[in-house]
Amino acid sequence: MTDAPDGNRAPGTGPAPGAATRVLVLNCGSSSVKYQLLDMADDSRLAAGLVERIGEDASRLVHTPAGGRRRERTVAVPDHESALKALSAELAADGHGLDSPRLAAVGHRVVHGGLRFTEPTVVDDGVLAEIERLVPVAPLHNPANITGIRTARALNPRLPQIAVFDTAFHTTMPEHAARYAIDVATADAHRVRRYGFHGTSHAYVSRRTAELLGKRPQEVNVIVLHLGNGASASAVRGGRCVDTSMGLTPLEGLVMGTRSGDVDPAVVFHLVRVAGLSVDEVDTLLNQRSGLAGLCGDNDMREILRRVDEGDERAQLAFDVYVHRLKKYIGAYSAVLGTVDAVAFTAGVGENSAPVRAAAVDGLAGLGLAVDPGLNAERSDAPRLISPPDAPVTVAVVPTDEELEIAAQAYALVAHADG
Ligand code: AMP
Image 1 (tube, rainbow, N blue to C red):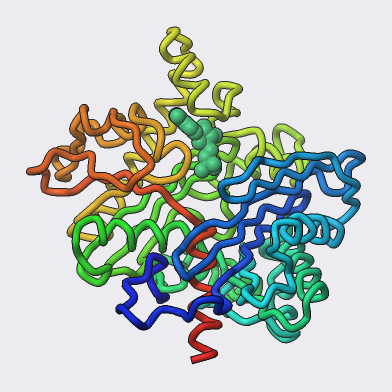
Image 2: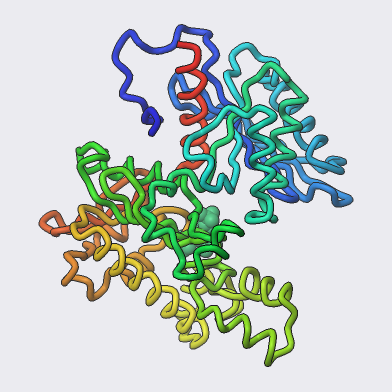
């Protein structure tokens, strides 16, 4: 789909020194903006930061230049426009202003691209209108993404703004995986289908996993387990997603920090009709008061494991429900793929929690899965294998890097347009 971010560029074909090779990646949420400045000449990170509590009395800005000291301060940031102005002032102070000739593009993480956006896209007014049309299916996310794009464009109208969609990698899912078995006319009228999210992570990790195996993405089938505060699994056949666990929204699928993942939809009717909750209250319950937090009061896996060690039964139950769901998806995606070359763990829990990885594959020798306890216990930031050398299926830990993937996709688009 894109050039590999670590680009196997042929000698002599790289960009000229001083060329516009930098990409500012913006991830705008409803009350925060996360950003990173990357240089695609060598995939280096020049700065990273965060503006949070936008619109509150005391917003906070944290900015860390590469190799420099972290700067943190309280700033007046009433809206996203002020947030972008504040972060571009920080970048400018390091010599990386939005007017820098070395900046090639701004890459925006856009959560929902529906069926329309299957690739990273240069934003113009028509594209903005399309993203706006998707607000009903992503009411929490797309409005903030749109504001981010508009504001960045106003700050430097000449700079290409590239939208990179969380859903895009999943648009290759076949109809039978993307469809809910509900009335087709109703579903189509309201765009109710499975879209999937975390797409940049699943794309990046599945490709890196192929590299780790010494193969091309087209040659391998990979199950990616993105286990962060949000969590999703995907089945990737030959570099293309054929199923993923999140659906119309990020609520479906695995047990997450605060989201329930799969429930019988009749739970909603029951809570409305019998428990007397409003639809909004059920929405909040399932998205914010469920998952690990709902089961045991904690959404941080580190804390849950600490409590498990102390013999805490609610924490043990939360861990068991989490792992049981994970196993069901590993089994389901093994069946979907038929042959599995690798299972890759990624994101906060997947990269750091040896107990979760061990429990997830425990008893799955019948599917060819096992981890070597010594390899699994090793701590490292590098992609690595944790299965025994002779295991039929490789189990790997592959740190994700969504910002690098967004920058690589955005840069590939503008570099190709130039060439
Ligand atoms: P992410 O959304 O990818 O940033 O992941 C955040 C989650 O990673 C947190 O909720 C933590 O539960 C989890 N996490 C981070 N470090 C560890 C660790 N060492 N062990 C278990 N979980 C961890």
